[in-house]
Image: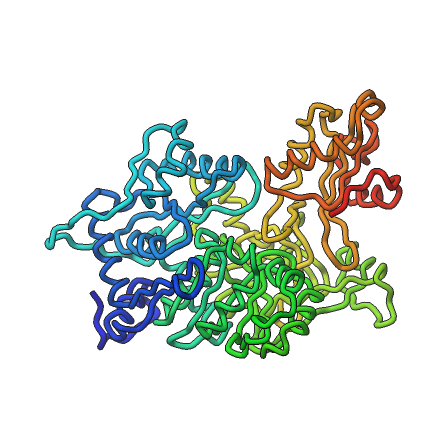
Length: 575
């Protein structure tokens, strides 16, 4: 399928681009998956990938799955690439999910399956054995772990730009994930936005270790190079976590031009990669676009990374801080290419009042706050900074909620019409009835660049995860010695320019008197690790009634930070 003589247009969907390059460059490498060392690498040409995609797509059509949601439950690998593209070609609504036996993450998978009404799951034989029995409570699923023979007469459906491409569930520890409905128009518009902002060219080599079911790994690492007739290079995330130098070795070996990670990824490298012969042999000069997004971006981390790996040819100008979310398909702002990391030193007191004022160079850390520039707003987006209460446009140098309008903005959340009307159909008072997406993020725009200062709702983003405080507080309050009720608070603190996660838990008076405090801290820490995959940096045990609250009983999280300064030394648990 595909015509090498065809000229691509703005009305073509993602598949048209893929089929075009498969016809024009059949022997070009489309995917390279390195599960372990270089000797284990698996390569697929555009011709081979195209054949597998069409065969699987026809099979899905014959199974009657067109216009139906189908779960994709795969470990990192080539199989996910084939089946995801096959779903696009067959008009199947792919629902990417994480393969896990972790109880909390499994709850998220179960919630996704229940929310979508999925009854068919595409997977591998080994994955079916691994997690099949864990999903039995939801009923019988139709498992497809192979592609049967297809009829030569089977044809693929015509795909419209406004048809559903896939359903991307929001990440994080919340027990109620939301399914973002992404159309083919959303996909291709965001691909063009990424291409333009990053300066990517045809034949792009991109990839890294990001999970394929995550929006940054899916849209940025996997689809972007295939959209441009390039090569998607990837490895399992766990390989990076275990030995972060493997990421840099992957970039060097395959001459990767563009690779992304949350701030945690770069920090992981600076902390765990030590001088060695392997490090000395690396050449990172090929890495021209080093995207940093998905969690708060720290200037210090990027400076440390650039310094530590300068001898390997990494340029600090390659850094590409960016901003985006699943609701906008992925990308919103970033760059320009070779612009490096830039930031503003803001007056902390003014910012606390919602005002943007740069601080004096002589200001102390207590008086100022460094905010990283999240890059130029893409020309594909219209951005407004809006007062979240009055719904009016903010004046210059006033922090407000970031509202966005674009062909990249998704069709809304699955099965949530009331939420969609509030979030995806917001209108600025006095400016007509143009609809915007309310991001829930606070920030401001200066000289065409976006600066994000925090969340409107108290969402915590840490180590690549979206952490909802009330979710963790629920786990803490369920502890047998906890006072219960609304007696726990989870919040972040800044320690030497590093964001730390802290919790304060009210404990029953008798337990505080009779139980070992260290044992209770270990118990609570284990509950959070097992229940949410979260590790605390600080944990305070307090008597009932210690947490600052409003008159209606809501926790004043901003004031909880002061508890760390006044708590006795034995009340601190640090890593």
